[in-house]
Length: 106
Image 1 (cartoon, rainbow, N blue to C red):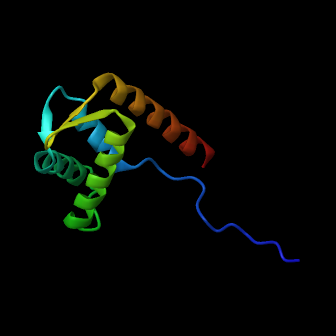
Image 2: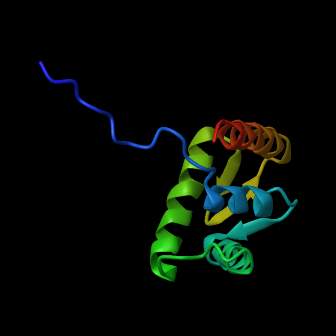
């Protein structure tokens, strides 16, 4: 019997799109998606992390935003999104700790 190897990556770096969404939504403002995406896209371009085309990035950002809404850390009212600062700070701390763990294992 042959042993199958697992070729998938087990350690992944933190998601930069989610990280930027969290940092922008931590402000006390509410954003419509278009405004939010413009800020996130500009921040990612400054970090040289906006690759893969703007439309793909827009789709990924929308998906990540909907995941944050589903988790309850972002509130959606109509077309506006507003982050819960305490929940986003806790999530950012958890992500930073996970990133440090991944980096220390490599």
